Image (cartoon, rainbow, N blue to C red; front, side):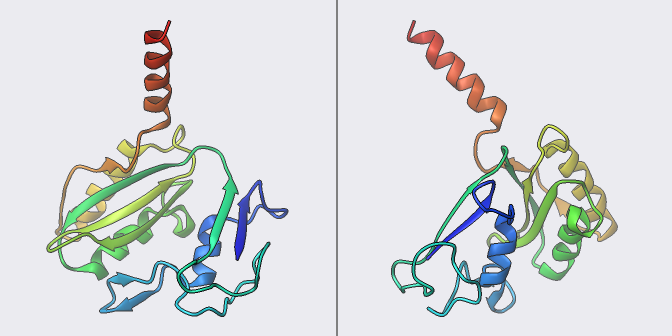
Length: 170
């Protein structure tokens, strides 16, 4: 089963809407473990291509075309996932937080819950703004925050690395 999003989909469906409809964000135990995809071969959403079922062991494919997205995570030193979910919700543009930011709380190990963010317009709202916002909201909850990090290279870093490589090959 193949699902399309962004410019690859006729109606510019979003990746997070596909994940929501397929149950990707639903906890499967103790409110902190995430399913990561459909648990059943019967899909609640019709795929754009391929069979209407997810074959166990093969899964699904999601293909999209979007502008650059940065992924920025901020650790919060707490086991209180409910409090961190509240912070994540207040950071998310979907709920009136920072424009073009999608966020959710994810358990990251003993004593740490992260606010995981997709920065849909990183030139408009970057990691430093997200960091400041989360620090302010965590302070209101009496929680300590660690330094956030990008889960991959930023767009600028990739361009910088490319330019270094191309310069070195001359």
